[in-house]
Figure 1 (cartoon, helix red, strand yellow):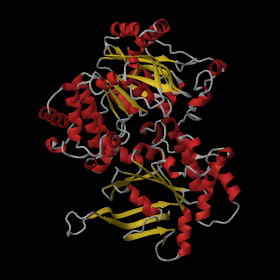
Figure 2 (cartoon, helix red, strand yellow; figure 1 turned 180 degrees about the vertical axis):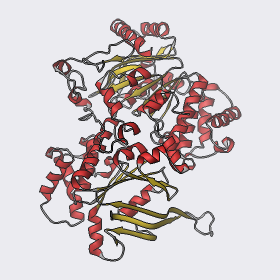
Figure 3 (cartoon, chains in turn brown, orange; figure 1 turned 90 degrees about the vertical axis):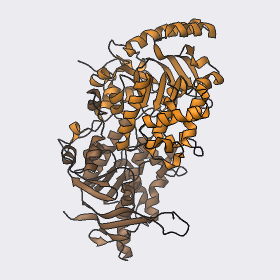
Figure 4 (spheres, chains in turn yellow, orange; figure 1 turned 180 degrees about the horizontal axis):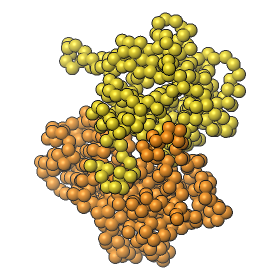
Length: 269
Length: 353
């Protein structure tokens, strides 16, 4: 399988505040020679603690940030090589769903207008209204939703709207950053199932970022574990669970609480 | 155990409310009725001018007991906790009884409640960064709780604070007391909140989603510390969360709330192993676990259809009926009451053999 979206040897460092008045600015390495790829129609997971570099990876994969070292390839070509047509195609093809739909949707915009926004900003031509109707249907909402404002929806519905907005430009890769952790338990399963259906129906690739290994395991076939800016382990979810090779993965697996573990009385051991 | 007592007490409580209009009678009820309980809530109703968010909730937590309160956003679980603390937002009021330490808290003045908070009843909030004062040193903040309620002098309060920080496994506690909240990690801040809540050995600790804002790897550590500290003090715990595994790990009883009412209550082992309300069962089966997913990549997570109804537009009868596969005409018209022996469920057609 060839990768539709790929990071090769990406290193990203940020400058920190000077400790002393005339001293050098210390630098923080957030990503350290990271390789990461997702093939067409594939769902891959990325797990790690906060501060491990997950968000920086998202920003680089979506083109919000340019890597200082290494390359980002879309369909095998570097997206920062200066070809604006290729950049535009990449921008269209890679869309993101964020953790909290309440803060990622403009509260003053009707949902229908929010959905049109990506088509406008990416200057995509075509029958916009038909597209909106098609997409709102795909995420399981009714046309009535289009005339309403974000505050009129529950968290689960808003996340469907955020997913609809990401689908508007007809992407090939969906990057979902903790898409269910802000949602109620009974709604989480609905949204995870929706993501899974969309990938199957539309042939999308999915990069699912989460701190909860069981959520990632449900939705993806291949998982990378990131810790302190490095990918420390990759594999099938079941292998990572049952035979974690690195201390970082072991720590993530040990942190999982289950109802069964709690009932048997040794969850906190 | 907790549950079985609750229903009976609730019935008694209703009778009391009907007859007793003076605070005096209620006070007598309080002192005689609930001595063994850290808190006994009877027919609690919390509402504002336009909405009723908690619609008649009754439960009791015995001294040293731990109850989990499960519910989704809008279920009324946080307002229940705030009513217990006397910290309801402006415009909201509580009716019914909250019997604690020989008093009915819903009848107490703000001043009486303020003297109580942090001493006999205390709370750990979800987000420690917004609950801690950003411009005061964390040690000072914890020490001021101790000074206020025990009359200890500055040096003694500080010494106790350092002790507490050590119990919370905070590194270098003698230096940590001088830190400001922004200098600490989320897990450290939450441990300071727990230290503050436990400082005066309260009879009841309410923890509202104490680990939701924390990293998974830190979550377990904080729960372990909370668990041990509550046990050491013999305090009772009311754990509010939508996270069922956390309830299973540290509580002995559980109450499941839906649309402002308790729909199922009983011992954790019973409710989680043999849920009787369809909502409880739905919550349990929609959790992704390694058992129900990894074996077959194509399996779908069972999910509860629909969504939590808005408070201003609750369906008639059982509020869960539009989302319930077992719903019949009775469910649409008549609200079920809690019933059952080991655990109680408010359901006309309970799950079961």
